[in-house]
Image (cartoon, rainbow, N blue to C red):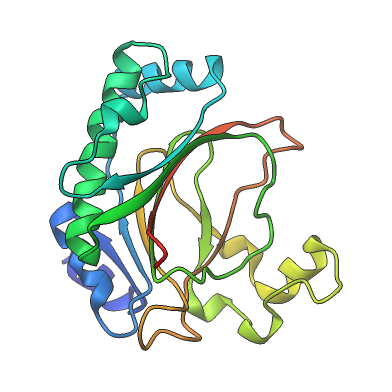
Length: 221
């Protein structure tokens, strides 16, 4: 009964996926986010946490969605169990991304982030984007009813002032956890103008944080 009640109150513009098989919900009218709240076993996740803390990673390439050469993509990273875990997961997600988008290829970027890179709440121009934080703080996002879209962009203000104007209830900012998969719909998705999911990178610099993030995008034509 509790699950049924929860389903009633969840805002219609985002969906929780129980598996990667439910990513197709992103194509529904009005939906701008599908969130797969998967969990990694603590011991295995700890391997990637340790690997992330020991290495600065920044690898980017266009991979074929049908046969992504992920092992080649990560070949410059030290051989270890953490790299093997990342390679297997990225291979799986790139194939899923291709199945959802119909794209033959995807731009894949795995990077260490230690700055407040995209600290302004914003929407993406990309039609569809997949994000995973493997280690550290995850991407922050807000529900549509907690956004003033006419305040998007800095408009000459500090990022702090702009964020306060964009998100009227900061206590309700949501954060993805490590290994969760966010499939986001942006402004250029057909029929989605004005409904891109509003999100930002988590603040890291003040706390000296660090994250390992994967981004999968459609290849620009």
